[in-house]
Image: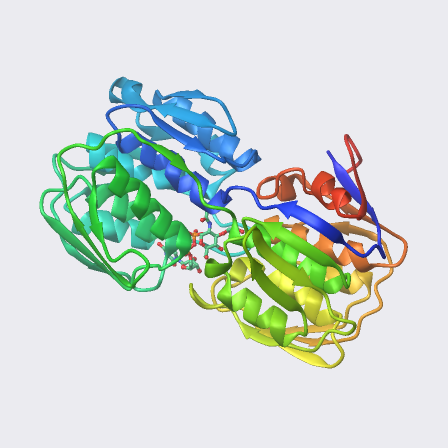
Length: 421
Ligand code: EPZ
């Protein structure tokens, strides 16, 4: 197992290219299943989650080629098993997003029920409620859920809570239903909008993506397309914090600033300078950081996927910050590790009270999930001495060769292969 070692204290300066978005790539890979011909995606990030999804698609009968430019040919799925096996779903919950397109195009899908994960229970009841409203029969047995329908029929679906995956999955099923579907209390995330753009290019009729009401008029057929994936707002936000906490000056090339208003607002509140420039977003760190209070919310609120990274910044500010996590019930796993490095954080339920200003000293820490591992990398960048991060496979799920890219802008960071876990 790999580990990452950081010697902290360097001021980060220069340019960093923001790559394609993981949370757009995964549902888009699934959307290719809806086409009657191959789909090609560009700017695809080289991540283990993208590989896992490719594996799943091949298991369904797709032909998959390339990586940065990825071509998915779904024509072999008709004869395939239409099943997402336990072994893949347990490594990546996003595997359940094949259900909507398989149901929409082939009228059947069998998917292993995802168990809980480090950050929460994460049930899929809203996905299934949506499919049922479209007329699908749902059957659970042996840890799998089967959804079946001769032809889905349009319906009005009001989600009990805002769910990104539920909105995407049901939107893909409804794209080939008979009649019109209206999704209410839908997720407004940029990755939902991106999926609607791709489905529209494939021939779907979708209006209102980006708002909380999405209308989908079903069509009989969809075609393969060619599409460049949007840049990753969470990766860009992570690098923006790296600039802010190291007193650095980074130009984040192609950063999707229009999708990052909540994060930029908090960075400016903390004293960082954020400038939208023609090539991207420039972030300049202040002499001293100011405390911030934040509550995670669905988009356009503050993204839960930036909570852990922003907590590092809060620990370095003079004064007290309060962070409230409202999306996932167990997303403070990084707190004990930050405290091991020297932070002063008290958690009570879904509220973390942070007393700055921490003086981090390097130590061995354990990554527990994707964004927690990114937050440990950030803490390592400012810690005195050596920080060793173990279980970095979590990091590779969402950040492509992060150590090489940070090294380019001055970080003293290295990866070691085959280290003890
Ligand atoms: C997506 O997960 C992202 N993953 C997550 O990013 C992100 O944290 C999350 O949206 C929220 O923004 C991908 O896009 C692959 P949800 P998703 O359905 O779709 C509850 C990362 O770090 N819920 O919006 O699984 C659920 O338990 C990952 O990149 C139900 O109760 O999230 C959660 O509390 C982590 N029933 C809340 O809703 C359902 O049927 C939001 O979940 C569905 C969801």
